[in-house]
Length: 388
Length: 188
Image (cartoon, rainbow over the protein chains, first blue to last red):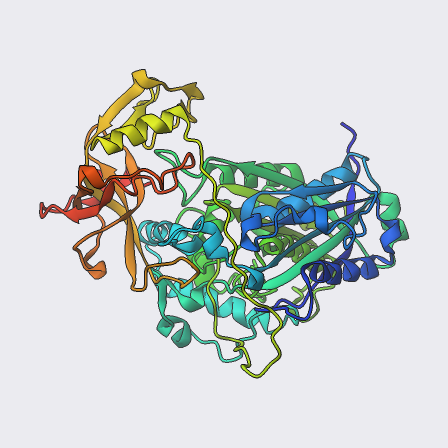
């Protein structure tokens, strides 16, 4: 299969908020898409195809929104594809768009992901309309307890992640939560939602969208701003439930990470990746994914958090944007990780820019921690080799 | 995947921009034969699983296949499971008051590893035990709905409500707890 480099030349996102009642659903996606087009120096007519992702339709109760939103997405008469992989969908959507470029199918692809949580109820959607629904937190809570028990992590690790990501969000004008007075004390004393997860260790419920314009090498040359290059993509999934499954370190997540590193030429992810945007909807998922994707050794993920390695100023910054803990328009949350990784290697992350970032990881997971999507982006096509 | 943070309150004097609108769609899910055997079993007071002939893993509710070995499982692989077991993991949920939510107080949902021949039921309710006393290793037994009142209407093909309508929940047997090292590899 022919494989040509894919460049990210336009990135846009909305201001994420609890309730974006100033825009309709199509208005929300257009806001992000228009910003991505502006960033790429393009018009709607320059786009060859659109790839859209969002979390399950029952979250807003608008079924197959890609059909009714085709006009708003500038996709009338153009190929339009919808992607579904639960919470990881924003990441998967970006990967599908990148593959359309890499395989020479299209030259300029707009990819968009969104959620408008205020126009529905995700927990109701996840409960299938039944009473006693637990939300994603209820599903993940026992796994976090299991991680804590097996790793021997002190309980304040979760609180530290919650504080770090919210402090990072103060440097990101698009982030939903702007908790200026966040502190360990506040996190610890916030109500217990899903034991062991406190209220402030959990993601918010947000309205928001994210969009990117992807193109090939020729398109990148014509772009007004420096591109980010897609150096590797990987997707893996497994069943959400079967006897003997280890949901704390799912096999699909381990394999996805290794395929990604191999494909990017990364042999030591902690040393060769400058910054990571990892899908952390509940605080404990920072150390869990650091270990689950072999960035840290077994039982060592929490030590990276504890030592400050994952702070913006640390040697392996995680979620300088504030992450999912600060903005969670579910369908867009994965694409935001991918887009924020790209912003970092373009040197365009503003106040939350990590110094000298040339190789970045974008990561998303979804379902019962069963779908994984990841990409490595670089400031140049040989960024990994230069990062030895 | 969210919790509502009270970071932005809604101004009661602001113009109305959104209104809740509830609508209903009634449908009946056609139950596939393998789930039908399972629901028939529940109505008769039995928990039926499938044991893979290759790896020996027990699936409950049965699926008709083993995803590990990629093998079909059939009625020949049926095993009647115990209605007693141990708590291998749990969470205590503070309920969100979405439309249709009946729970108002924190409640526990537990994973129950059934006694031999095994099988795991997830997201089960615990009865008669205060939530703060729910713990890993605790021994439980099923509390069945009286036979004449049992219903399987809530059970679907995707394991929705795995034994709802037939098993009311699980109560402590009062036997000593099982040490975690005896089931550490079978937590999920």
